[in-house]
Length: 554
Image (cartoon, rainbow, N blue to C red; front, side, top):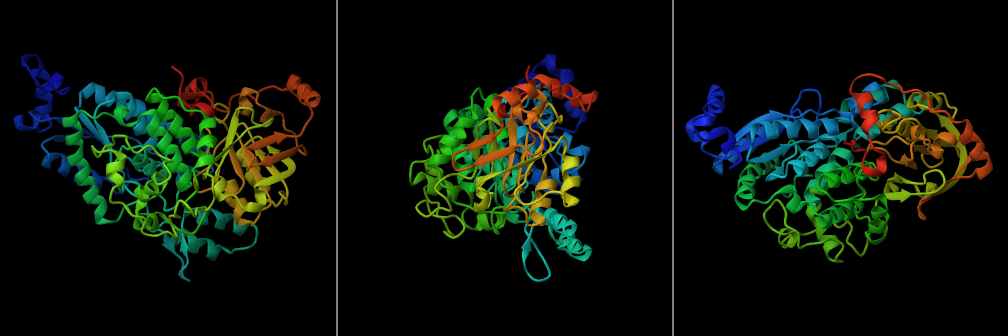
């Protein structure tokens, strides 16, 4: 066992003495040492319950003959970090999580791992670490939050909360109305209740084969989540016994599956950053063009919030991710011969699965749309591509041409929106918010929610080299590459320029002649870095663009 490096032989007596200082017995040190990577903390609602999950996982490991040893991983709450400098520190934690987990595992020579994440960058960061370390590993997340309820019985969620602020600024809601959402939008622990980034990534742990059934959908408050955790702890011992490792599971075909299931579920556009980053750690190359190829063949089967009015608890009751996979398998849209963390193939996992609610998970022959939930657009504004959650775009905005309203930061844009300076037909451009220019590629739920709250989401588009929360809806187009700080065309746009968006045909163009653009390019000067010290300054120097997953260069 790997742990023999710290537990066996006279030469390792000093190592053992320190393990005995922790209270471990000879019997415990004779068993496999299983690292339990717990992201529990007291600032993230999706992580406040992970101590209970961790104890359940530990029980499962012990029942199956292992010795569980817990160490931490960090996590940022994107909702709390939203709208201020804190959001610059969200995406960048993904690399910190992967790096710190690698350091802890290799320093202490664990035999296998159970990852216990729940939120946006925490899940992909630990998947990246799992791929990099490549020792038997399985995931058990904390589970989604239940949806909230307003006084009139309507269900609600975090995206409604952000939109309520926009409605208030538009004079469509008073402070009492905002407070009602404030008190009810997030009623329990767990990752926020719609198909936002955290739940998207937790569902994709099932899709890619790195967790047991229900990991993405069983609500955080359900006892079934604790049973899942115990079974996960038991299953890691089986993975160790069979020597099934992450790169055995996360193959090129598995990433194809993940992207197809992403399209069917209508996941967050952030998956277009995280899947390539995880694939990179596996030695698998993904590019944005893959997304459109898969989308053309893969129908969108689910409209969970923010695209619709159903929530993760509903998806769970309908059969969960496996039921969506079963629908896709009927048309051979996923590979079913792949090994998974269950120790079985996908085909074996799906053998007895049923779609229990065809209204929530549309049958493969009756989808919401014949194409997937995400589209990659290319054109003169974004030569290398940009992404949009097309399943959450109003039909009126699928094709749109309008004048640019240009802002060099999120703060300037949100001030203009709240001041009523954006009108129907406008195309808001927010630039210098990419991985390098931000730095950190902030999510921009505030401006998109303000637009929706002001009931302009069917008349106004927003384009950025930053990114969006999974809670964003409307014609919100992000990840524009090259970003403005790299000299991309988005940095050359001026107020009044016409922007043409054609989502069905995957096109986005700046309607300005080449001679004019050449003159602007000759006079363009990149603004000085917004942050020049600390981790963000180092990050900006090393980060690649969004088409590569915003990973760090060696």
